Length: 355
Image (cartoon, rainbow, N blue to C red; front, side, top):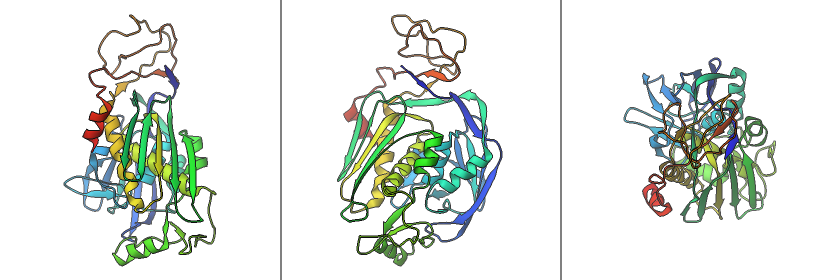
């Protein structure tokens, strides 16, 4: 089973920078995204506290998801990472060092587009090391109250989201998206975060969302029939597109591309901020369910098979798992390995571990 993808890792061609407002602090944040060495992944540096220390952008580092995705360690935290992570993943960046002088990534216009365009101006540089891939080998599901997420085997990275709100603005929306840089830029990067006006007012009263405004949040009117933003919506279904965008950003914390179909269904919502916790927990189950394998790239040879299985252990330059005998490979085609049976733990066990 094959899937067309560029198998090599990428970083930025040159550093890029921007300045914006922190959504919750209301403070000015200066942020730079710099090229990084292969296999470094995405790393965050706080230049205002400990500039020589970093936090790896990985699901194991997630410490809070109540209002936004926050990663942290014993030294410092970084919050509101999801839009920037989505932009990096959407453009195909595997390795980057992010420097900022605050505890949160700037909200910009409430979408991922400013980050995506910033990264696009830099361009990306191919590196010598190959990607590692997470492949879903059996369906995974997770339910929490009125929310459901499933991840199924799929030859690509696809997200289908559905939301249902008891108002005349959002109502029921469903959207399906298969990741590519072009589609990311056109279809979901511009979708903005949103909330009810009274929710924002409650956050203000508690000293939060101090940087929120109609410049970076879609504010749904008290009457539930319109939005307060003078320019209206960017898409008729901007709300579900933004939910899908957040899922892309949160699943980027897996640390490598995912092969699977993620389906997220949310019934009438009471506490919108808990959705991200679901995604991270399901991603945790997926991570335990799979083996991370090195992709095999060969321009000249035909893969030999022994009873449909390649011999040998998986190393940096070897491939193991179910093979398609007699198929030639080039630099844009790769073969993904199925996890060894002893690692393909049962669904129930995986979900219990994720909880």
